[in-house]
Image 1 (spheres, helix red, strand yellow):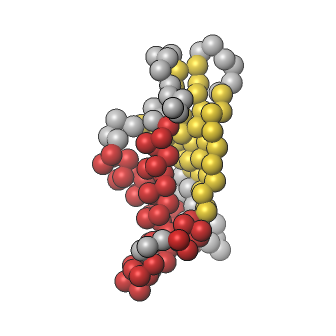
Image 2 (image 1 turned 180 degrees about the vertical axis):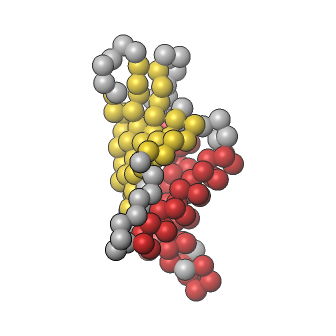
Length: 131
């Protein structure tokens, strides 16, 4: 059985560092009793590895490799949300560097898809994007 936050004074936070090739997550419990959050779990997901094992590779010609990677990332995020049942999801907001406009575009797509998917499966889950 996985640990689930049951104390009403505990808030379970899922921190999410989005990317179009890899992303990291951290699950933390925050209570008024402790001065700092207690980290429950961390995970880094490599979308390239997911991509290589994917049954959806046939869709690359129609959708493109990046779209497939983003879709696989969101499936993994949903798995993590279902496993840990967070009260809040906090993610880094997309930022743009002059030489990485395409990376910014991919992160904006990931942000929009996170918002839409979370709305569809857990409309009660608070989603915050931090600059």
